[in-house]
Length: 228
Image (cartoon, rainbow, N blue to C red; front, side):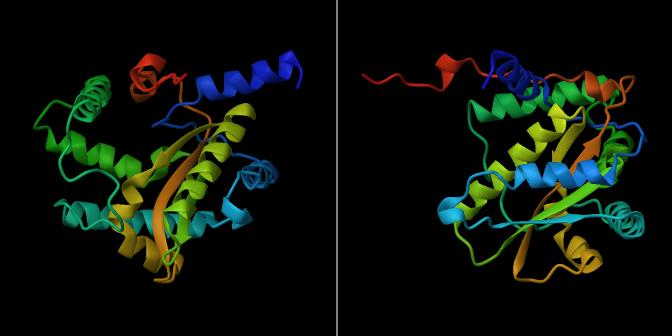
């Protein structure tokens, strides 16, 4: 690999972040297919390639978003998730990191603690893929083990970096696992698959306050041990 190619890869990795407001500019379906083809080069144990991906067309997406937003507004109470993403009880250092990014995001959005209307608006935006022109939903077969979830993570990251390299921004979205029953019904997903997450793809809205969020990263020394 040339130095220029290595620099391009590094730039795509370093510049990628979760975007929470998108421009409506359409994305060429041929490019979406190419990104998926690139993501499918991700490694997987014994080449199982356990990822399952659905690209939502406008009618399917509109139906899904309408059902999701109606459900969220009708009953904003916590829902039983399809799988446990976060720990039941947060401890340090994870608690501080979680609080920091949450405070920073809602500070940019002007949503103060106790502003339930503001929280609902952000939840609705999340359920509408933040207005991105491309909406994806990812699942994995329920009978597979944790190794296949690791492989799915590699697929997702490869897709996000490939998109960044082609000038598209992205946001992986775990919120859909909270509404897995609705997602399953509207997308005809069988019970044999776990609804893992969605992905929003498109070009970031440069004027959106939420897109000024740049989460901090732990320095290498904070999580790396160098063994002789």
